Length: 480
RNA sequence: GCUGAGGUGGCAGAAUGGUUAAUGCGUCGGACUGCAGAUCCGAUUCCUGGGGGUUCGAUUCCCUCCCUCAGCUCCA
Image 1: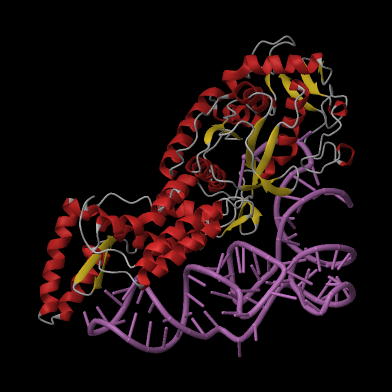
Image 2: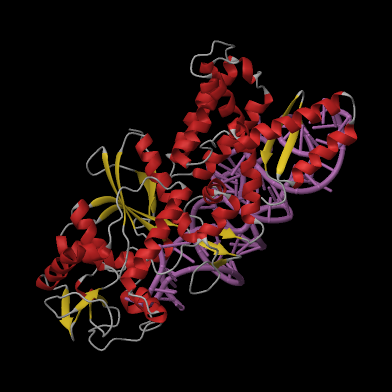
């Protein structure tokens, strides 16, 4: 197991990570509230923790990765009311869409997506415990957390309860003892989905599901809790108060990871502001790997600014250098098969491949610094292009060695995974016929004809590039 | 107002108490090419918000001011 350092929001410091029970790591991430389609900010969080889990597993840890789904909440009810849909049905629809987007994005690391509504017994039990221990009180059919009973409330975000602006955004509720108390159980309102409880029919508050689920799955304490930076307060603060009061164990988690928010031209992307770019749309236009590259090309804790018409375009351009190089070597390795005898790599290049892989792991071991890893991938690619021997005469072993850094990227970052070979398709065969005709034209110096073929192919979305005697092609052109 | 993060080259975005401040994008030039593209080489006049301080030396540490973003019970 590789040692690595991780920044913890609670202690505001980076320190060596030590699992509670090696080699296991419990990772809990605040997932989605399925009331609308995902935007590219949600994708950033998903990809961040996907990469975290992938890296940890590569290093030998046994990660149990959980992302909860808040499938009952105010916005779902509101949206259901607007559209005349049962909120739970609406939720299921968006959950299915989310999983579809995650599959396309290559987010493969999550073990379990618990739904809040499947944990109502645990939620009720935890609320009951909080009441019995004196941390919560029932009032008018609801149950509230009494933050005065939990002195360290606010430690995560640095907020002091008495410095908050009470009612700044949400009107005070009549049953609360203090404005900053938060709801654990909401009394039923007509027309909403409800569950029976000792305090009457109602539904869970926003924060309680997370700790009901995490205590059930991980116990009183676990290793990492993640989410967007905007959840730090009040959501994660409330989780600490609930779980630590209910279980008596502290700290709830050893490391709090908060992902920097995605902004649009400097302003936070959110549904309430209305400046959202759909995740699926971005994937449609640029492909999943470019979207991942865009996220990973900045440190996960930094805010990342999205500028329409520029950010993903630049990412696509930069990513192309890597994907082109990786693609060519993958193709060569595929055609060489596993046992081709051939030239060995120059020693310098072989050493560089190995040290690049080490540099990549080391970059990630430094608080998951994917940006530094990507810089190392570019340096490797330049080095490779500088002194690359003829690929078709290299041994299988040599090809595997120079593929190493790209295999690492596929495993950990989920990019450069290698596309299915297009040259076996009908299209590929047809293009080869056309390219052969063009090659004959070039051979007799009929460049007008050769250029005409090239430009017509480009209009059809096929870009060709001459490289010495060979001509490569790929899909591209104006539509992509 | 309170809490937190941050202000780096044309742009995006790293890092470090000390030789030329990573990497990418863009632009310009060169090599290669019939041309283009890709690739390689070089350049883009040493750019760290302002002002103090600590230090032999700070972009990095301290103080202060200015500005930006986020949070202050919808939010990933």
